[in-house]
Length: 428
Ligand code: PMP
Image (cartoon, protein in one colour):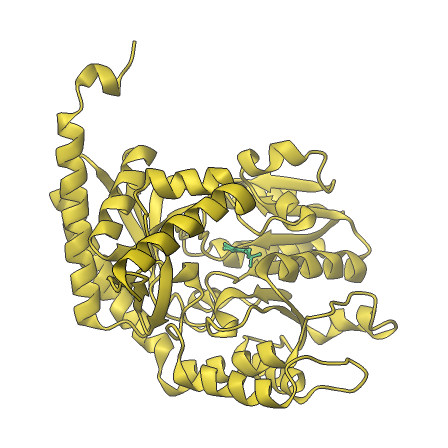
């Protein structure tokens, strides 16, 4: 493609965003100087339409655990595509059965049955419905700052008012307590509680790791009150945090575990919830009580099977743990060199949050990093923090390059802020 064709393609794409997708989004891209479009990707690397290379440290977020376009996932999806991509649903489907079996094998404890959906929010929606059905109760306890998705039930479980207020009234019966506070949890869970829903590590809230003993304590409270525990591993699952599922860091088994994002190998959208056999009794009498046209479709399941095999064969869980320790150390050193702007670095495995002293700094650093060929993304429920969730196949030299570019981006932002007159920073 000629350079002038590329420029025109970028301009036209942004104009179409303005006219047909969302003018606000187009404005945001222009404001952040993102005058390009994504074009192709492989492993941990993305190229834009101009051929510029970026290291993907956002990972979608947490979608590309096996990297972009892993050849084994592509091959599995192509094989299915050439035979029968979608299902008539009148006959059982082998890919769905095989993936459900694999999930029973890799999820902890006696989690065994799986329902397939198409996204994270749908997985949580189904889990909430199942908890109501199985317990006959209608109330839920969730955490402040939580992110579970944006459909009505999952949004009701989420914990940031900004995204909820315009849509009130939401689903009734949800109480929110501070994440990590066991006493608050003990007070909130009653014999009317169908389930407690939590992320084992809060992702969109800026990578908040709970104190050791917290999830165990919640599990005990649930058991005492006859409530179920739903763990949302949509972001933390499938190796991301250095364990196949983050709950394994603390040896806690939920009654229902939800996942999505990485399960489709970065090739297909898919969501799922896996639960204890006893809970599925409620779905046995009418297997269509909860259903989805595309849930469990052959293409997505073929991607899921290949993805899990890649995670196992390439030992990506161990790799996430090792590289995560290294990344955390390097970012902690960076934070020590920039105490005025970087407040804290935290995380587990290759899910790391970098908290800045001000949300505006995050926007500036993110834009500066992009110019330097590194993609990071701020957390939806905590805009002072950006999150690194790179592909687990990222190499150490790529991580080194990314951290160096991030440090340059932080320094450039500090230089920019130093130039702003103090009256502009604090209008009276
Ligand atoms: N749960 C968690 C923990 C998430 O991080 C997200 C997405 N960021 C979701 C649910 C929603 O997933 P989706 O966007 O696929 O609906």
